Amino acid sequence: MQKKRTSVDASYLRKHNQRLILDAVYARNTTSRVELSKALGLSKPAISDNLSDLLKVGIIEEIGEGAPTEKGGRKPSLLKFNINHKIIIAIDLNYIDPIIVLSNLQNDILGEKEIHIPKDTPYDQRFAMLEDAIQSLLQSSGFDLAQLFCIAISSPGVFDAQGNILSQNVGYGRTLWNNSDMKQAWHKKYNADIIIKNDIKAATLGEWTYGTGRGDENLLYISCGAGMGSGIVINNHLFEGSHYNAGEIYYYLDMSQPDYAGALEDRICIKPLVENIRADVQRGVNTCLRDCSGQISFSDVVAAYQAKDPYICRKVESICDELCTLIFNLGNFLALDKVIFGGEYTVFSETLQTRFQERFQTRIKFSTSIQFAALGKYSGIHGMLYSAREAFFTSICS
Image (cartoon, rainbow, N blue to C red; front, side, top):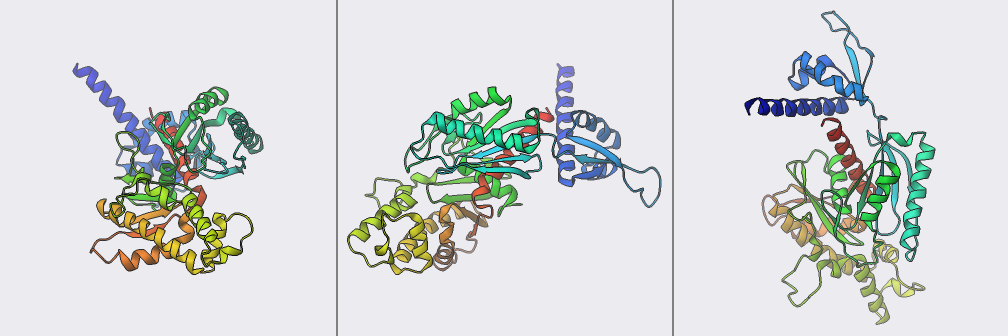
């Protein structure tokens, strides 16, 4: 029994050290065995031994000799991370127009397509339009299909660790996808891994790794606009909860309105906002939107807000107060220095920030602050590229 345990421990240690080396070379891009030994606290023989598999795979390359040290001696052999060893397709299945990108392992976007899918398009046609976009990106990239590691998808819905759909909100005019069919069909067609995550959790990862939350160990990301949701990073890990639905705040209950049977999302997101404004306009409310021809859209509301229309500004202030209450309570419950806000309602950032600072932030000594997403519509894309690279590194070192 002791011999078997020693073998398991040795195997784990090798995987652990290989991952340390791979992460270090990735972070430095170009380095040497000597630098890795000093940085990681591993002996030079241990570095060389664990590097052998990574060099054989091709994820790390030797690119010649560097400059000798001040003491002279042999020139160090330089090591470089091979950013083009594999490619990744990332897809954000947002509510209207999906974004599809092709990236290398450094998350450089090498090609991009945004496709408009009319609302009533049958599922088979929607599926085919995505495949056409993938094919176009692959053909124009110059990469071979064999270099495709995975297709990483962010989508509305709750998904387990294997990307299986657990639940999906059918409201708010969302374009829903049969993710199980997509996963099976694309795994077979492209011979690639298929990773699927909730769109808000993907955006959380994107902002945490490349955006406003970069460097934060603990993070709350809240998105509001077409829909509503949040993602939580605790101790540098995405927290998904026992049922993978951590952060599903759309059904947040507000006891200040105990007779209201719906969800917070039903009160403040784009669809109910626009419907409420249309009804008020029909009743003769004083607003510049009375002059709009045809039906009022969200872009009309944004334009009126930017023009400081008093009626629209009051509507936005009411929504921002509800969001401020949510951000204040959750931010302080999790003891965070800041909460990152994203989604379509970032167009109201000035009002949201002002209302929060004036009415909430000074209430307690260690109150959270609001910062805004830096990556815009690419938050989810970068989150999925990060997830795909992590999955590939794990597969390499196991």
